[in-house]
Picture 1 (spheres, helix red, strand yellow):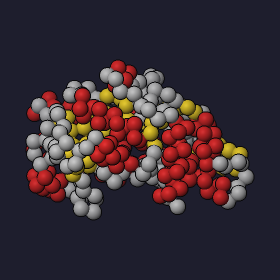
Picture 2 (tube, rainbow, N blue to C red; picture 1 turned 180 degrees about the vertical axis):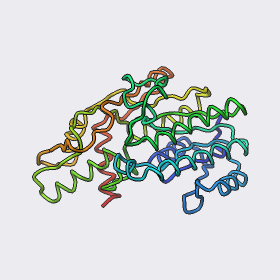
Picture 3 (cartoon, rainbow, N blue to C red; picture 1 turned 120 degrees about the vertical axis):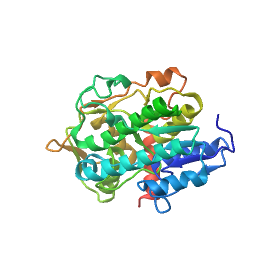
Length: 310
């Protein structure tokens, strides 16, 4: 069990997920949280990672570090997405084993599942069909992380667990106009259109794909819950269980940002997976449920954008 003085390494603490996990730990009084930004520790460097673990001896590890991006970034920087994520994942998991970490939680992604997986997507759907081509290389790196945790558990008895979050958004998100995910990308587009008094906003795709979203603080709470309560080999989905179309999402963000023009969809651009809803029944039956409604979370995200991305 984690104690208030336990050494806890949060890899990726400057990212949206990692910073939320640090905040959740501090909320419960944990005061020995180890962090290291990429300027101090390049997780792609095996020797540097091994030295860090040997010197600091963390007892618990949240592996939240990753190179992430939206459809365009995943499609454009394929080599970087697979190399960077594979390197970081293998280095951290192996160092956790060699340094005697008590427990590690690896965070994957819902993109690990086949493009046309039966909905809602159960954990058993992993490796049952082709991946979505636009994020295949990122997904393969995340699948490797799951399998590494399973292998080190099987061979060495390591208490390494994995969870697969649904689509995330919230404080500390990436609002870059080219490399962002759908929610932060829309927030920027609608905000800039409002400021420019534009008549319309054009979004990629048809607007018909169904997506599930979860506020990042809810994921951090789920990770904390799993670190305390879950010790099994089977990875778990972490989602809200609710879905909206991209068009409905656009309407919510339009309302939150106050843009009064029209919304157009460019159907010459890719939609990605037609539907992606996670089956999070296993986790929910354990007693954990998300707390943040989508409209409320979007308002918080827009406030974050106004204070951090201007």
